[in-house]
Image 1 (tube, one colour):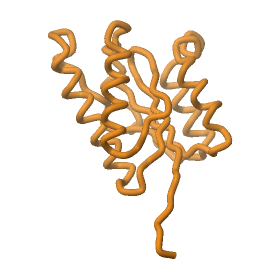
Image 2 (spheres, helix red, strand yellow; image 1 turned 90 degrees about the horizontal axis):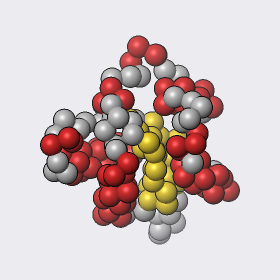
Image 3 (spheres, helix red, strand yellow; image 1 turned 180 degrees about the vertical axis):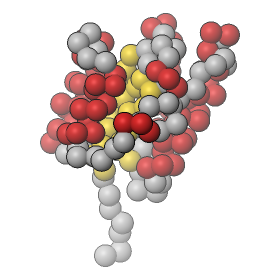
Image 4 (tube, one colour; image 1 turned 135 degrees about the vertical axis):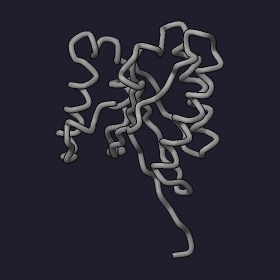
Length: 150
């Protein structure tokens, strides 16, 4: 086969370090836009970005030219640097060391988009930790609770 073809939908999730509420409402849309630009540069278009004060979700089509770990590193590194430039209140902004990335069935991308769009409502009932544990269980990801949070 002369072509390399891939189209992988990824639901990417990461939290601020120690789940600090640093993604304040007045900066959220700007941060999401900046992250969208990073995704575009990585040839991994963001189909939806959202979250609340302590974490984000990105639905992306991962480029066939980069690894998932490169995507995670570049998004987190670039957006963290950008956040630190947005004022004194963000000078100690960091993402957690890890991340979650889950494959998405192409037929379910609209469900994931709506899920990401409704984060505020969703988290009025469930914490980030409970949400993340549910993802890990849904996708049968083995984990040790001692090493999930930082």
